Length: 222
Ligand SMILES: [Zn+2]
Image 1 (cartoon, helix red, strand yellow):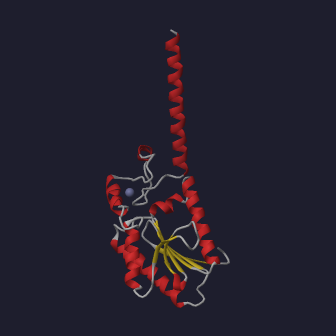
Image 2 (cartoon, protein in one colour):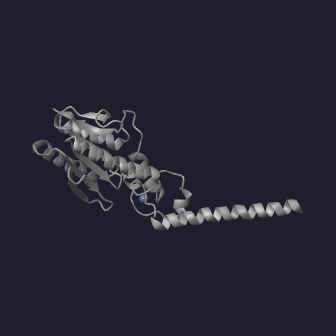
Image 3 (cartoon, protein in one colour):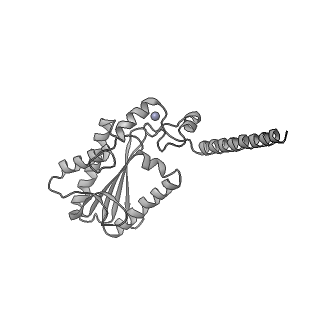
């Protein structure tokens, strides 16, 4: 008898905890529905719950498959194949410049994707996950803080910072990727030609609807 009662209490407790957990998830979701790590569209709550412990969540099997290509780990020390393509693009377009990759000796411990020391130029790529997370969890907030701090430190030291951000996967969208790279090149060229460029940040944002926007910022407002 006692045993049954105890079991009953225990079970109720379990259910309550689960319900609480579930309604907390729902609240979190309603506040800001999670978006697909590949296409950027909101994910259904059902799919959100199913993928709750995943860093990257997807709206469909198709997006998951395409994203696998996008985030394919590469052996060459690049964090993604997209980053590797950007590096190759820079090397091809600026053959006379020494371009360093994964640079940590400028604002240690922060890592910078690409640096052309001669022109005090920093080029950064922030892929999908990175960008989404700046609104998201604690780790994401830290990422945003790091990015803001990094930018400020670089501008104070007279660096020009060109950053490419994308809300959607670029590697599996070759036309858009090409357009984004050409926009990046245009901005880099402007930086290299302008003697007053020091302390300027240029953000190139690729949005979910495949538009490319350029936002400029200088040392005063950083
Ligand atoms: Zn999707």
